[in-house]
Image 1: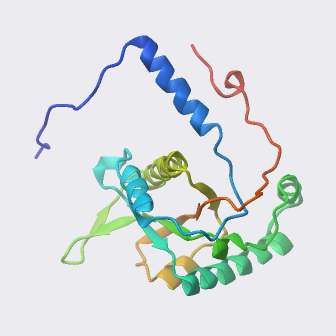
Image 2: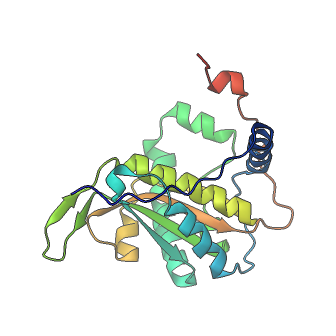
Length: 220
């Protein structure tokens, strides 16, 4: 049966205001940087909750909303996650990564040590649900899971930046240890580990640039 239709809530802006709003949002987001030095200073949980509500508004396949966010602030859990992540990272840097990948990472100064996983006040483990489960145990297939979770994650990062927090996207591979540590069911697959908090005093980031518009977009 088709969904009930309701009036669209949409505000129209004059062209000049649309341009100004778009430019203002760009100027805000262009200051977003991946941070690896975090302050342990606490962050109100309400900020994280509001940002997650933003993520929950993301477009997704068939409105099945195939995501789950686990917010970790417990020091013991963060330590366990760090230990497991660093074990996978050592395997990556020492055995699995091809030379060209290591060369690309060298410019960023990264290695297998991930102290930010304990230093930051929050880790958000993001899972994609391959399928849903009905009360009687039957499976419901989810569609476009990676695309849906990826869009939600991008909106989450933007919301956290808008609130005044820094983030780092961490993707040790494989990440199945997150299911074990966080006791998530088999239908959930780790998508990304998002580190969230305020930058440490004096935090520094690589001097890199983003591609200009003419290199990333084509207008026909």
